[in-house]
Length: 243
Image (tube, rainbow, N blue to C red):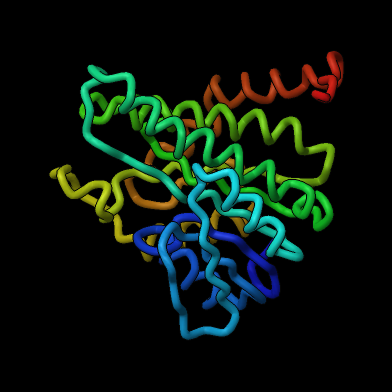
């Protein structure tokens, strides 16, 4: 699938990677881009439709789903990263509410449209999903859970013709990483890497130099092979739909 002539929804589109993804999708000829943000957004390109969309707000998710008539690609980019030391349960719950359950809730709401279009889901995860970053443990835990969600969605939705892609960036120069003294990729270069990987059909997308250095190890490693073995279980043990 290419971006040209497709309709996309990008969550967390007001800044950072999300904002860069909107611009890169337009540059690649997207037909329509829904830009989901918690605060009002305006855009000069008529192909962009702003959506008020806090991914932790069930009513806003439902209203957005009712507003969107068709959708080819959902990019779950909205996320939160706050300092913590695992001393307060509330910090972990806040990360899970956005990074895990926000992704889940938005995906479920738009899944009928994506099934109809035989579309795609792109979940912006993090390298922290593969190895915890101890200076941001709640974030790492939530991203690991989001990565597991993505793997489960991939196996369960394949039969509906919906592909699922996980993005595993390293540090990106956004507000989330202001306190980290590390080399960081620009949001614009990461957005290009994400859409390049998507158009290449990569299940896991490593969109920047740091993450790309780990790509081959992941793709040829035992964890990826184990994921494929587990997905094959669906043939032997079909999952019963919930009522």
